[in-house]
Image: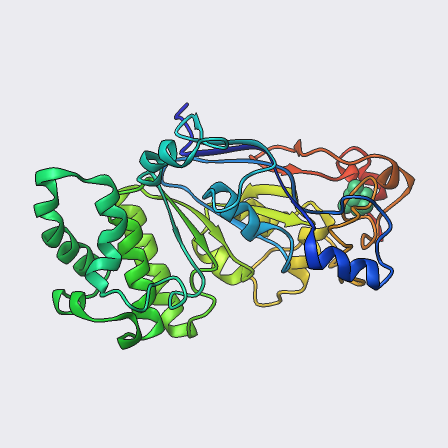
Length: 339
Ligand code: SF4
């Protein structure tokens, strides 16, 4: 079996609340506990093989972007392992992380905000590269940048311009060229097309897939748009309240979603091409606060199937075959699968 490009084990990211936020909670009378903590990611595990596209989906605030930023070490993980080609980087310091940055790059939702407006494109694209190459190799950087710009559909003339001189799609191409400059094995893409027009989205997604085919890139792709995910993902992880509730190959997930939350997400997206062999589920109510997680199953306050076991016991991800894992007690008691 090949070594995963990325393996995440029991990753947790909790944000302590302090300062003015804590004061606001006190003033509003909302504080009922010492040392309040936002439980953004609560023990998430998954793996991505070389060349594989794994998407993380879920409603806004489910923790998918926090997972991406924690893996990229923008946030310091609270607990867990982040293995890049087998090496755990979760606790590495800044210097030890530098060589890892060549294996893992990130592209962001808002290409304009992620590019330094005072830098020319050639300097933006060269930045990660110059951290990696030293001495005589640096003479090759201009030619490398020209080749990278051509690879993402820009030209050498663009190297001397500033980010504000480009459209949104072109800016995302610059971000992709910068990420590619150090020939990474993994790209973490946090909602990379959601700020773009639909016609431009398709161009950027096609570019990302062409680069996957050419360089064998693996992607961790964060998206709230299930139709985009259905188009590009090999595997899909579904998150709710900081937990992974289902993880399956794309076709299995879209044709046989098992977790009630996944079924509700698909029910709410009628444009999705899915064969649904179970009743649709309509989501009602609000996502609970990540400050006070519910006991038992994270989804029980909105689940039409919940019973007393769901309050008492947190379900673990269980293998149900065909590469699909589901965190729901219905996998043990399927006769209860009737709203
Ligand atoms: Fe619903 Fe219970 Fe399954 Fe949670 S464990 S999704 S509450 S049936």
